[in-house]
Length: 573
Ligand code: GLC
Ligand code: CA
Figure 1 (cartoon, rainbow, N blue to C red):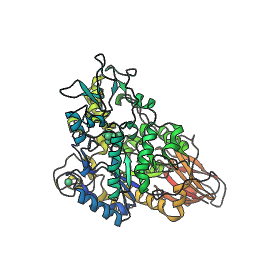
Figure 2: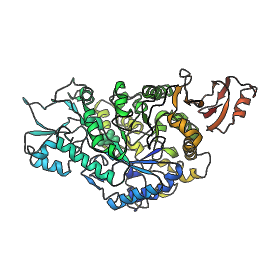
Figure 3: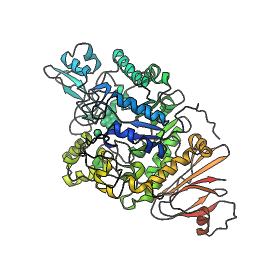
Figure 4: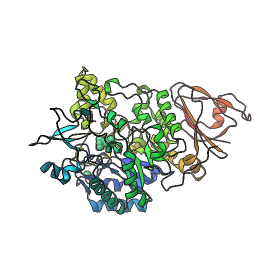
């Protein structure tokens, strides 16, 4: 067996949970989720078994991109609370042995940040160098990159012949990491937060901090004459130098946990990113999220069980024991995992548990996104006006431009919009799904009477209690080591719609087996039988063996029949 080389760190073997604050819980009745709401729910999260909470941006922000546009890194958005409340959250979390991880958004800030205001007042001055500011050359913009949210990355600076660069929205100007002064400011801010007692950061859009300079055009990929900014990123080299400097100046001193939002690293770079001395502690595995994705919504392919399996197995194989991926089925930028990876006609509690089981026991750090633990699904809105997200509106516009009718474009929004994961958490079946006593900032998913925590809490067969059980198995002392550090070995990878793998260490083996289809399917259990430690159908090993008509005393590999979306975790003896 491959030796486990990883030096143990405090965050290994922990279970993480993502909070998107605006829609998590409203503590003061103004219809918007906040810090008070998060504090109120700490006991809930503790009971679920959560150790680390990553909270999407809480900083002062005009919320053009829901907080990913920061106007003051040193303050909390008054909608969410204030610094004292943040300190209280950190302290209350600490009491419960929960670590708080903040979002670090430093590729860009808001155009309402004082740095940017000063830069606009004097583009040639000191603060102008905090941003990328350039002029047209021979009547042409410095380059033809398309921003992630549509249109050119260049925006004119009023009253001048200059332009500033934004990789995302025009209200999110990119910070110029080539400028050491800017980098110093960022490190100072990071340390200021770490000194306040937070445990680390999720690093937003972090690869974008390095641009390929000097600016140049790429082959246009749409009629707008622009090129996907990703092309530039592929060529940009040297981001590692900034990441290392940042690590040395900040995280390392605090033994902080960092998880990178990295989409486009190369296989050869895994160790560099998340190896023992990597830039980050971990990075998200976006393999499954990228499944079937193409440049535009209209071209996206439907994700099949096989595509999903190949994506997760591929990431596991690439990473091996080099480091720890952070495993997800969804986040605030993606539709709900259950709606995406399970065919609509099969969506039910059993299939939701099957998906949960398939991803949760992968090697890495399991992340749960708010509401995932109760099986929240995509949300249907009646018109594009009901959507809030800027990127949804842009994608919708592109669909229409490419000849799609409104009905179809709305259907695509229902399938792919980021707002699917941004509707308020469904705590109860009562008014406003128990999210707020005030007026909702955003519609709750109309399915809240069917899907809510209140109705699942005391039901032992609920999705919620399945998550709770998964976490407690993960943490059970006799399984914790193997489920944290054990090797990932695919099992019957070629058997269609079967997602199965071992977690293996020394003389222990755990087998995860998921029949990812409605139809039953037969599968062989290798070697001797074992003990089921988790299942979603309530069948015991004896039941299963009996159903298969096998002599219970037989000790060799046996063939069993898994029912539709049956998931088993077996400790092999
Ligand atoms: C990341 C965030 C996303 C945001 C973008 C710009 O991808 O997760 O929500 O829109 O960065 O900050
Ligand atoms: Ca509130």
